[in-house]
Length: 304
Image (cartoon, rainbow, N blue to C red):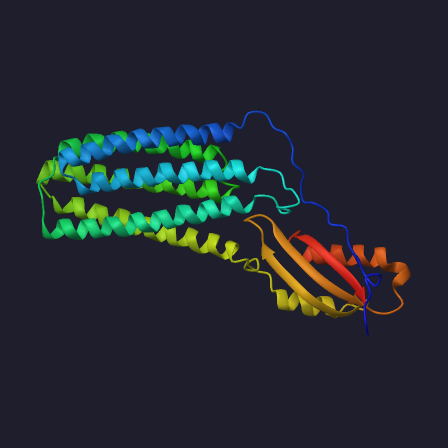
C-alpha cells in the first residue's frame, strides 16, 4: 500500500527540560580552584621526587597532574554541556560531558601504564631514596588531595558522570598519597627502597582499574548502546502486540548522556483510527515513557 505524507502525523516532542539562567556557577568556581591547587601540588611533588630520587613521589605528581587535567576537562565540558540547543545541534551539547569523561578515562589508563613501565625500569636499576623528603611531601599532598576531593564532590560528583570522574581522580590520588607517606616512613626506618616501587605499582593498578571502568561506561554511551536493563527487542515486541498497532518499524533506543534516554520509533496503526489519532498517539507515548525510564520520545504514527 502506498503511503502519502498525509497518512501520518508525528507526535509533538516534549522537551525534557528548558534552558534557564542561573546565578554564578559555584560548582564551576570550585572546579577551577581545584585545578589551580592540583597544578601547584604537581610542581611541588615533581621537583621533590627528583630531589629525593623517589619514583613513587614522581608517580604521585603525574597522577596529580592527570587530576588537574581531568578537572579542567570536566570544567570545560560542564560549560559546553550547559549551552542551549539550536537547529544544528538539536539535542544540545550534553554529549560534551560524556566525551570529557572518555578523555579522562583514557588519560588514567595511559598514566597507569606509564607508571608501571617506570617502576619496572627502576626495579632493574635501584636508586637510594630520601625518605624524609618523601614523607613530608606526601603528607602535604594528602591534605591537599582531601581538600580538592571535597571541592569536586561538592561541585556535583553525585549527579554528574564527568565530575564524578574528576572526583575519582582526587580520591585515588589521596589514597596514593597515603601509600607514598607509608613508603617514606618505611624508607626512613628500615631503608626499604623497594617499597617505593611497590607503591608505584599499586597506584598504577588502581588508576588502570578505575580508568577502564570509566572508559567502558562512557564508551557505551558514545556508541549509542541501549540503556542497561532495557531490551529494545522486547519493547518492540510488546508495542507491536498492542491492539491499536499493526506493526512497528525503525525503533532506536539509546542514551544521550548518563541521565537521558532517547527513543525514536515508527508505528503503523490499524485502519479506522483516523479520528482518534491524537488520543492514540498520547496513549502510546505514555506507555512508551513508562517502559523507557522517561526517555525523550519521537513517535511517528502511520496507517497500515
